[in-house]
Length: 493
Image 1: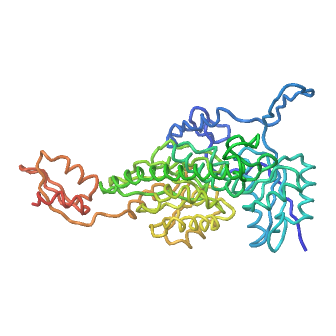
Image 2: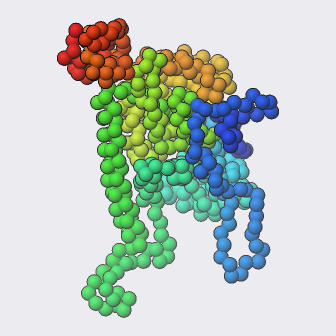
Image 3: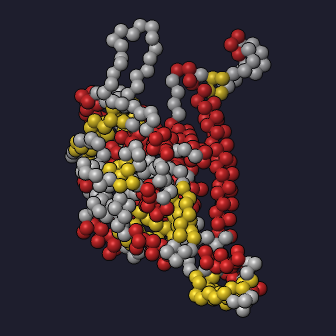
């Protein structure tokens, strides 16, 4: 016996990321004069670029009688969501559907309706089953939708069969996420990674109609003359596959070259003894907000999924003055397409090479533990499970205190903060300083006054225990790392 649940999907649930006006002021929305400059979020120049051109629903300039004018309608896609609930609880299934609605709105769609069917497993032919697919067609017609989005990755045959029934375009969760990544990628490396993932997704889904299946032949094949005109030749779809494979090979070479450049920069930081902190977590958990609050990086902050994709590296400093780097990585999501994981592997390796991982969790989310599990599954794919992890429960100002307490109890290293109010950030800075690798070699050196560069490095990279200026130079007792200790070996007191 099957059941179908309707989920009305409107705007995504309001989250706790702050809103800013055009002048960079934090707007608290209560109408008083308590708005304050949001200096910790920087300039966010990308926000203006992203908002410069946008589609507006409800404005129609269509002509009733168009005879010789070819035109294209510019509007938001109207979509209906479809899902099969085959495992887990009903709450888990509904949370997944709400996340799909947020993804659709981020991609630029207007969600009209969501339908969910209870089945032991998805139908191998039409995903929903023939009868329920026909009911979905009735919903599409009643709502005036032009797209159906399924909450999983469909097989090529399932998508074609479902399209034949509902008579509108059908896409799956993977295609939707890839579309969002294509919209938001800004850097050369990010664009190449997204294109690679899209081509790998498209390759097994190529299809042809009519002349698309015709043979390609050389010579004077049209007249049936000449050498090279005989034989079956190459079909159009085979030609498309070959071109895609050629492009995929080129993109992989380009990304490998970019990885070499990234590895060189990372190796330079390691050679200088600069530890690194990676910020990872579920999309829209507040990673960019935390980075801005800690460093004033000016990274785009927006209340939508996958608002920022390109990794950002910024300088940080512990309370005792030691330098380190912050790296903000791409956000994760349930059922993150494996094509994206492979394409972004060089970026995600920043996490595996870091000294400390700040795993940011949205404390106000209905299922924060599910977010933690989804992120850890992706980190396991890129072999980043050995990095020391600190769970940072963000949005503590609006989260249920019992949920926050439960996470803090269950996780070995965890802290609750609010990027909006600044709650807990002093403790977070102290925690980062305690968890980063500490200098472990004691030195007692007399540094001449003409080697002030070494004294500066002692203050930046080491832990000063005692310092005194004497006639011959600066007498310093400190705890340093192995590299700096080797350079100071000639100046031992």
